[in-house]
Image 1 (cartoon, helix red, strand yellow):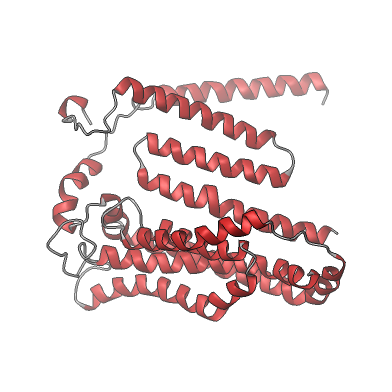
Image 2: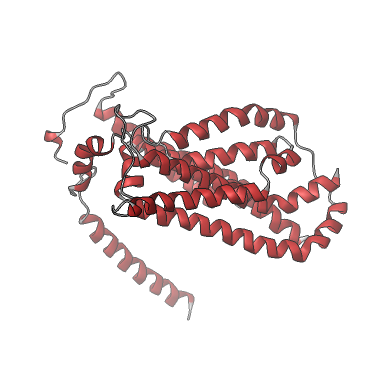
Length: 253
Length: 98
């Protein structure tokens, strides 16, 4: 195919794509228009039904809780996959990594990075805990809170205390926390089935004050479990990836 | 929803619709610029940092379009989690290349 033919093939394809794209754009609803009834209905009834002022969380952990179970187990499966794959590689190459480490001269972490990481670690931990435990009153939730919680642990590593990172998040305990988080979510759903209700029915008392931390029944509980699962899964993935780096850093000092 | 049915909620933070439109357009342009910057950055470690900044811009975009929950998710995943994983992976891959 000559360059000229290729150009024509490209232009034909682009013309077709542009035509369909513009056709599709012309059929879109107006900017900001919302045709469906569900959002309006949920906005009207969610507060009365769930006592959660964070309506997004009410949708995530109650109205479409079954979807969220699936999403949570995607992350669970991903963490398991990463752990499995990297464990295999680590076993294979451990000796090689040790030999390489002797020749590597890793630059030391700067004092500014250590200081910033140390100062941030505590507040970030509190922020993560706040996000994970306030799904029912704010647009946060277990997913965001879990990642922020894990970030606090990574800050400890950044401060250069990798031995401290190992000590505060041993693999056994992190594994267990992840399992409790993932299992806890599913168990809340099964508990509802045991009481003769549909899976993941909100069976706990909703509390009297809308938007209080104690309100919204299973929504707050599920968000907490999701926070544990996500945080632990993320710490696991990162520490699996760090493992060799830690080994290298340690030996090159 | 039909705009006529929506009762205007006025708070101390309420801005005029025109100002909000200007903000949304500005952030949209910034997001487009950020995405272009990510593509044009050729050094992979720098590209990860550019990607992190792009994640931050996307988070601001979601905030200006009134989706605070998505903002939080994008902040944690796009600006923090993804860059960390990519940096660690880059470190691992580079070591093997040596």
